[in-house]
Image 1 (tube, rainbow, N blue to C red):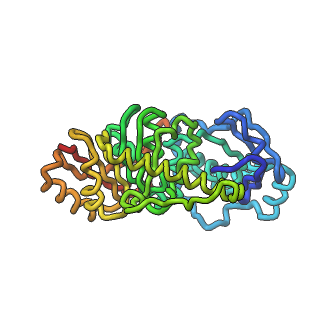
Image 2: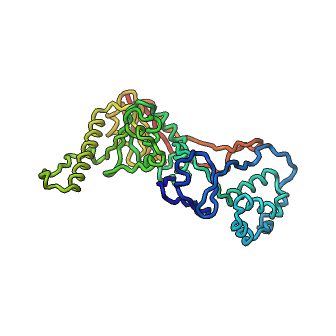
Amino acid sequence: MFSPAHSTISLGKFGSFQADDIIGKPFGLSYEVVGKRELRVIHEMQHQDDAAYDSDANNKDIVQDGSSQQLSYTEIEKMKRDGLEGKIDAEASQRNNQSFEKKTEYSKAKYLKRKRQKFSKVFTPIRPTLHAVCDHFFTKTPSKIMQIRLDTLSQLLTFGNVFAGTRMLVVDEAQGMLVSAVLDRMGGHGQMLAIHHGDNHNFDVMRYLNFPRHYTEPLRTISWEQIYATGEEKDEEEEGDALTEWQRKSMDRRRIRRERISEARDMLAAGNFDGLLVATQMCPISVLDRLLPHVAGSRPVVFYGPCKELLVDLTAHMRRSPDCLNVQLTESWLREHQVLSGRTHPLMNMSSGGGFLVAATKV
């Protein structure tokens, strides 16, 4: 979540609060929404006991028909007005559920956890790390980042041999997720040229990571159109006294823009990049043919795609090319586990895929 100062942050049905109430506070503190726009710091969080249970109870006599819950909607609303909030709502649901005592200890723990999640107004701001941001977008809006999963992103960085001090050539159509990952790995040291579509890049993910200024200094951007433009934009010569202040500022902005484009072109022309990382929905073969000459020898080339069909053609093309060695098409597989005492097992619902990678070494 990205909210400026003096703004209002809404948590939907749980209420809202002022962003100033948490700006400047350390990450990891838990807050409870009290009333309509007030926050209260929670110093002690109640956690379910993770100890292994030993019980002969089972769920065979439980019928989920809704009749076992005796707490009415009116009673729940009254408790909310009285300020009892999530904790008491969950406990009241437990007391008024006729089948609660028939459940196994595991089922009771799951039941209480669901009720706390449903009624609790407690939230915890966490630091916007690359892990947290990538996991958030993959869970909420995977299409925005081309369905790239965290483990696939980490493998892409490993195949690309990204570290501080390298010069990387990047094509990113994943809203800046790949660019952000490279900047995070470089730590403000090195150079990166990112190629995009349109006049301005759309690396939206970068703003969520709250990078310090020196982290973004290695980044230079240029569009495909600017790379292959035949002529340069020129300003009409006008007398300085005849220009208004707005016109002078506009000319200064265009001059700075031309200088940045020229610097990016020179950087691309110099070549000898330490790696090529691509996440694009364009034809990957055409991207490879245009950018491979700018990569130094014995350097990695890595392509990412949400589906394998185009990457299969790319793999065959690279294996036929004398410029590529050790071409491999891979797919990461991730299995998440619940890890609790006596209850460690794979999760029932997991993602079916996190994308595909083609990795090779330029001769």
